[in-house]
Picture 1 (tube, rainbow, N blue to C red):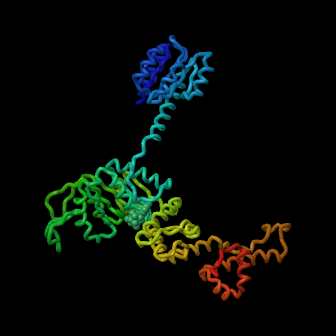
Picture 2: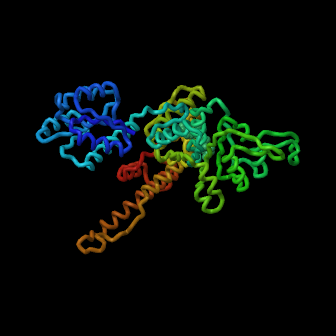
Picture 3: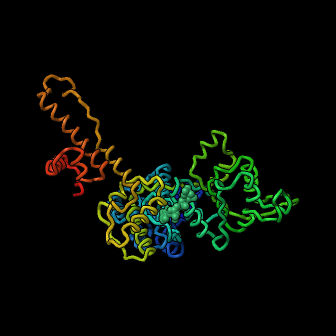
Length: 471
Ligand SMILES: Nc1ncnc2c1ncn2[C@@H]1O[C@H](COP(=O)(O)OP(=O)(O)OP(=O)(O)O)[C@@H](O)[C@H]1O
Ligand SMILES: [Mg+2]
């Protein structure tokens, strides 16, 4: 609901606006003189002010500086009679919202007011101070990650169930902890339940707990993880792996926050907040009858989809520095530099294991370069370099297409020798690319296998603008 001040001495216009504003569920107030308007402006906050130019005690525009100083910075809509349009235009230039000429229709008034209010609402949203998140251990600032931070902030401010999805290694657990750490439950437990790691026959007792003697081997009673999460957060990792029977009983726990430990006659309560995670497509599992629809609806009140690393390459620089520092410190060696080629390899790779794989690769690189000051691609894990080489090959490997010139148009036929030359050039290039990759850039090997002399090889590399091989 917005507060609207109508400054106009024409009671017909004023009454019409008061009625319109009231019907739009906003609060109107009216002033018929400049003097009264000044007092109202000094005493109250308004969202929008309708301002007539000709008022009995002066020019309405004289009040604009006072309006500009208001803490609520209202939008001003000028109402002008004939002959005032010049001054109204001047006012527009000084930043008023709009001006309307009398006689004005109700619908045009309504439209202008609606727009002004919508604009303020949007402006308010945009300038709302950002929630300060504690997320020191989450690296990255790409737009897609920032969108996730906003959702973390939203989740942390409430108790709604959250589902975090994303490929392996994208940080689902990390983000779940960030929600917990930023929530009001931060000083209580964060209980992790790895649904994929629990054998089916133990899931129930692990979650719900059991009494002594409830089943063979239950030589003492044990509290379940749901109980341990009381007043804290229950993180159900890989929720897609929850056996169907448990899905049903867990749905009830989610609805009522009550459960019965195995072998117990009474029910217990647990006030936990649920965060679930999965790297499986739960909606597909629902379609295949492997996951309950009602449970899916309940757990995904808010969904955070973590982007894979290959879709946020902007973050690779920050991740590189972070892990370089971490592992150099860990190995007790001085901070290392990286060559552009090393960085190119990091950004060119597709990181199917995401940040986890990235961290491992950096660990390997720092460890294998241990006392060398600079990292080169050769310090990266071999499997990764092989994949990169294959990918590069695929890219450069355009199939030799002996397409006839000109799609058959007689005038575009070249000489046979020129046609043959083009095809041989392409084949030559592919041969070299492949051989360089297979021999891991070993020039001696390349010369031995190809039968080329070293100088001929270098000439060909230059001709085809291929990478330098190791001498
Ligand atoms: N944005 C990030 N900044 C820093 N470290 C990260 C980030 N994302 C993930 N990691 C690190 O990568 C590793 C994997 O993260 P996490 O265990 O949260 O991934 P996950 O999505 O749960 O993977 P999985 O599906 O395999 O369980 C952890 O060591 C985590 O600290
Ligand atoms: Mg995980």
